[in-house]
Length: 374
Ligand SMILES: [Zn+2]
Ligand SMILES: [Zn+2]
Image 1 (tube, rainbow, N blue to C red):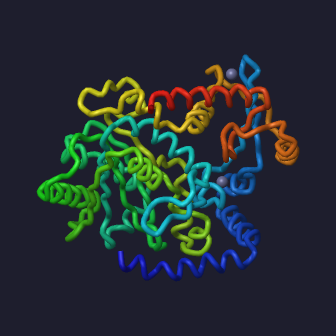
Image 2 (image 1 turned 90 degrees about the vertical axis):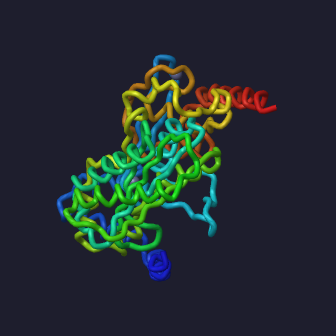
Image 3 (image 1 turned 180 degrees about the vertical axis):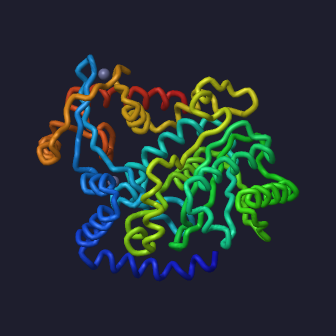
């Protein structure tokens, strides 16, 4: 922790330098470097990020416009991080990055209904980290993380996510976060020790070297606010453009570029894609339907439905209509021919008629919540 704090000053200086120098020039340099290395598609994605739009519509003539993002962790738009308060907590209400918002909404729907979530963080000791600059080893981190949590906590399902860096340092620091529904809150020292030992064994099995010390953390979240904060923290982009441009060497950059098809959020057991919808909450304490609904962010529901290509007004499937020119669309948005589907929303727009219906609909949802909370 101390080491990370010491390095933070150089990181900040670098960020200043970035803002003082021409933002565009650095971006152009990075894009041409990516292109030179043979990743033309990624380079094109970065250039076109947030500049393209597609139009979608359904049988009931509800019209939507989707702004396209490249989704790369090292994109200035998609990898943007949010300012955080000194003692935890985020400064603004919504994540800045569209990719962060999407991930957050997805996790929220699947994990929030469980009353208590356990959170385990499993780290890799310094001398073994190099071995994880490899896609197969990163995949193994997911699987092994889940295996350990399943055994120690008797867990029935989990979400795993690998972060490549810590908060401040640019050093490669792979660690796996495991979030899982649980029935216990505090755990015994013995159990923590057990978690540590089993993780050591997994690392030994993976790396062929026995680590002396491994750092593992356990905590639990049993309120909506705490769960929300954790979900937001876990889903945040951890690479970012500044780090990619100024903090990483060529080898590390190339490694990140090579992770094109690496899924960094994985679901296991009862939370897996095929079973999570049919889970009936036998073992775990679940929030009641009313509580869940009351705590859902309506803007998020709308965006979530749209991301799955369903119309948030009538539920019909949305079909691709046309690719739209970015400059023309911007003018149309200025003239309010297209309106954001929710406050501060920058990825999804709809036409005026659809907007009016949507506005009344979410108001209706809000009123029901109000009645319930009284
Ligand atoms: Zn992007
Ligand atoms: Zn519709």
